[in-house]
Image (cartoon, rainbow, N blue to C red; front, side):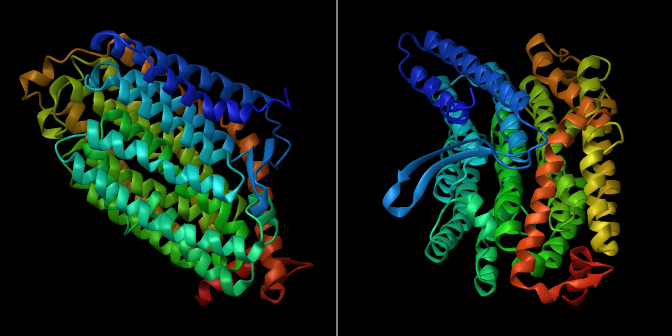
Length: 521
């Protein structure tokens, strides 16, 4: 099976399901029902293949596995190259896990153009998986950019009243940053003569180019995450997107920015990464505090969760640009945990929205009496978002803060205030929706979770607790790749500026040098 192209099968199988859906004929009702089942079966089968990859993945190998490489444009030295390491493995799993849940969540919520909706989601799944598997710059860019198209359609066709405005704002913001990244990729190809990502990770370009290339890639990844102050497209996109669109947007698409920093910025532009690290960490702290304060005054549940996503992504960039094993490990873990928890929170909002057709917190209250199952799972996800020990949210935030503390104590202390603010706005949300005064008769008459909704939310609740209590299955595969990344970053930095190291004992200490550089900046 090692010679079998598993990653290509995993990546393009959803497209087979999409083509099959396009060929369905019959009455509108039959076509819609067959499209739903085809999309569900296809996505479940894709998830099963990704689980097989997880089981076959060697946790002791920090490098890329399941590598596939075929000449694509031989005259230009561009290949179709795919592979997974311990970092990208879990983003692929996150994509394949959330897609069938999104299809189930849309089962009743989407009643118009169901066929096209399911095709859009399966195409989106192919592009998400391809982004995390690509080991060639050109291939990565094709997948990375093409993700915009199905998400633009999902928001623009099946979204809320201001869907056109939100979809265009999402598209233009992300496209602008990506154009700069494309120009940077062309420069890398011109200077390095290759688009092979593993090769480029081993051979960084000249220092004078790194700074401009870093900024070009940063423009794309910062918008994608999104970082403050280029985050303004996210609340609009979340509010107008259908529930499943918000789930994929928060659960997977935001992670592409953080993944890009790990795959490109640190290993390929080490000197620039070290130089700009204090700047990025400062933006991260501002994002954590500012968006947490904005979340506190929101009345729309989706907007509150959207702003909380910006704050949680702040912990990710804070950990990544600490350049420590603990910080980067925490950043990766935080992205995975946030992907699960934010997806679950948006699904919880979708449950009550389907019943009352409003997202205003003031329209709810006292539903703990008539919806005890919903109140229970909502509480689990709320506590996970707060970062309560014993939930998956705690591990990522703790490791990110630990990594930041080793480099800059002040940044770490300021970021820690975001955990307090996070507890404030999430507890406020839960109190007003679940325990508030039962003033609205419609809210107190809502029915509890139905079996389909239990099937969607129960696996997410189990994962939040299971990963929080026993994170070893994730850490065992993530940590070797993170250590390899940090070693690669240190080696590449030494190639460019060996004199920038500060002697510490018998060996040069990169962390000490990074601290001194950060203080100077």
